[in-house]
Image 1 (cartoon, rainbow, N blue to C red):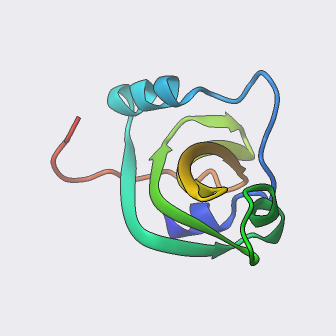
Image 2 (image 1 turned 45 degrees about the vertical axis):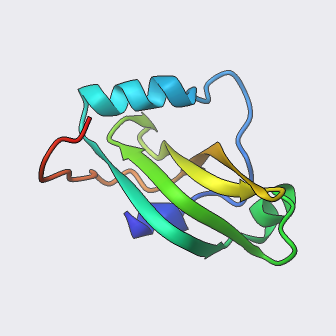
Length: 109
């Protein structure tokens, strides 16, 4: 999961193909995926940090949702709960990492 998070593009995606958070969570329930929780995880993404109002080059995440749906052979979306101008907000981000997210353990949803 770490390689997917660090591979996200350094900008916010736009356009009609970005999945909504509710659709993404529903897809997580019906297909495999994972949710990861962090205590203010900092990722070096200067362009994204600037768009989210960060005072340095880092974005701050507290939760990430991954599923195994890929947009194309070379891209996927993930949802990250990021610090956005001082408030945590869910953001859809594109990543070129399409590896399978193995989810083992107890289903919580």
